Image 1 (cartoon, helix red, strand yellow):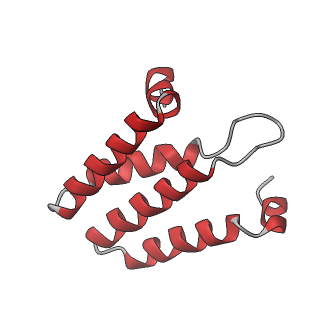
Image 2 (spheres, rainbow, N blue to C red; image 1 turned 180 degrees about the vertical axis):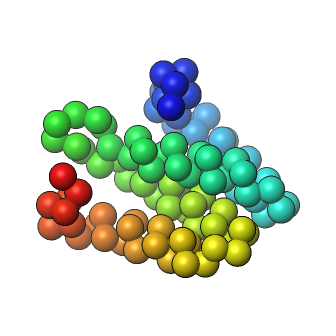
Length: 100
C-alpha cells in the first residue's frame, strides 16, 4: 500500500465512508473488485501501526463488511465466513495474543 492510499484512507472519515459506500455499490452491481481491494487495505491498516496496536473499530468493521460482501459475490463463501470469524475474534480481548 502506498503512502498516498494510506493517507486517503486515514485522513478524512467522510472520504473513507464515501469510498466504502462506492465499493459496496459496485459490488452489489456485480463488480466486487473495489470491495475486495478496499477491504484488504482497510484490514491491513485496522490498527494504528504503533507498538501498542490500538485497534480502529471503523476500519475493522468496514474491512469485514467489504471482504464478506466481495467474497460472497465471487462465490467464495468459505472465505466470507473466515472474514466474519476474524472480525468476531478481534472483539475477544485475548485473541490478540495469537496475532503477534
